[in-house]
Length: 156
Image 1 (cartoon, one colour):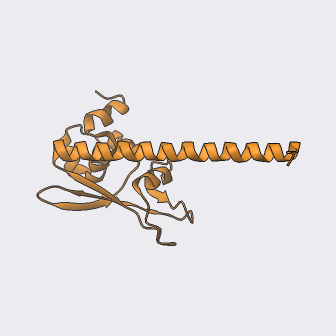
Image 2 (cartoon, rainbow, N blue to C red; image 1 turned 180 degrees about the horizontal axis):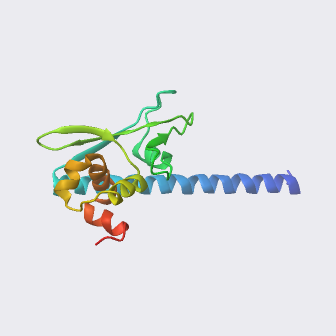
């Protein structure tokens, strides 16, 4: 069978699409591995466990951590994530636990976390933990500790 010029372009487009899909899948896997490693380190060194939960209220899709993070937008005032199936925006939750307690909070993206930390008049970890536990916990989740989060803000 001879390949016409039109068939050749379609075939190349399909190959490029397949390559792009494979690349996106590899990127998602790398992100999931980094998140898993970060959570393991946090648990080992801080004694805290984090778990993200996000079930779309519209289509009942149970989002993975990667889908939740990719569904965030950069608006510091919008703490919702987007469902990859139906595009509904809704609030995801972060469950933080240690040997003493378990807490459920809104899960913030890195930009929202930094925005909330920037607005705090204090920089001592214990005070931040009490004053804004949501920003504190999201900072630990995304950055590993407050020092790294404040460095992202240019504060040493």
